[in-house]
Image (cartoon, rainbow, N blue to C red; front, side, top):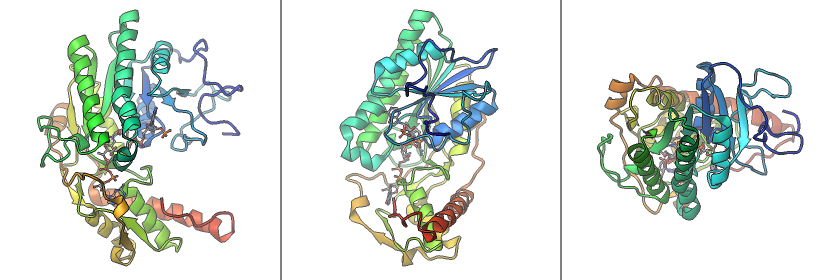
Length: 374
Ligand code: NDP
Ligand code: GDR
């Protein structure tokens, strides 16, 4: 990508100005994705491009490039007319940027995936988390509502990235009718975003859907979520770059699916005749310890030789047991997960072994320090 971020930055370092022509021609559907640089944003972008969409993503300014999950998709618009993914600077804490980009991109579908998405971190930065996750969703809905009222473009469809964390301490199985009992600032903020979405649907007739997605993982998962933290450690321990792995509560149980499967459910929700809310889950739950056993065991290691329990990774309030009932999504959307738990763990371990081997080459050549675990 040369010396510039793949973000649609021009030579002056500014995001594409509104007056520039930012649309492709023809009848392509246009999607706008917040959180496009995250795990789900990258899979959803691939999915929508394959469906023939033009995809616009909002990215936030960072002192480091934050587009590594998109680099393989990115086509520099300076070199090609075929660039169907376009990136623009905005922030969920900046209402004016959201309205401006909706006005100029003229999307048919909006996917709100942006969030401070780490549950444990939300206890450290609760105010910021609520601002981005809850008020951010409200800002985006309000930008959409005022855009519709100014332009009459009432066909726009909106997806809100809701979370199984909203169920918190309510026992499984959790479905659309299960009461929320959030256990973190993140989860409480997601509940607010959920109800903002319902409210804009009821009050203004916005085609707005809440996806209540249970945990979904992949080789692109952020490295400080427990699954990826484990598979990164397995890779690095296997090649000799690390010996110990510090973790918190191993008894928590999660319904873990594959992110690539879950983005399809997001899209399906927006293709229905009526807007609605859906739980998306594998309907299987496993403890962190089971994940450990499988991940270490798959490369002939015993997790007990490496894992050290560290109190700092325990949360002030924990969510003990999540297991979804996704029968509505299966019945109405025709959705079902393709990748099972064991396949998911294997996919993540295999990719992280390869990554660790590449790191090892650099470390051995003196080009890289054997990093601390994330
Ligand atoms: P990630 O943490 O991987 O991605 C979050 C995205 O939000 C990143 O693109 C991040 O940008 C962006 N972002 C963060 N803060 C802001 C901000 N202030 N303004 C604009 N963008 C911002 O999350 P996932 O991809 O895993 O999840 C996607 C969504 O789904 C999130 O809302 C998450 O809470 C929710 N969710 C996720 C589940 C999961 O298991 N993965 C389950 C249920 C819900 P940057 O790259 O610069 O950090
Ligand atoms: P979660 O995911 O909180 O479910 O939120 P995470 O992987 O962070 O934690 C899962 C469980 O593992 C336990 N755990 C640890 N977690 C982390 N991160 N690091 C550790 O060292 C560790 N040790 C044990 C946790 O206590 C927890 O019980 C994810 C995010 O993607 C949210 O954005 C999303 O909404 C939910 O999934 C559904």
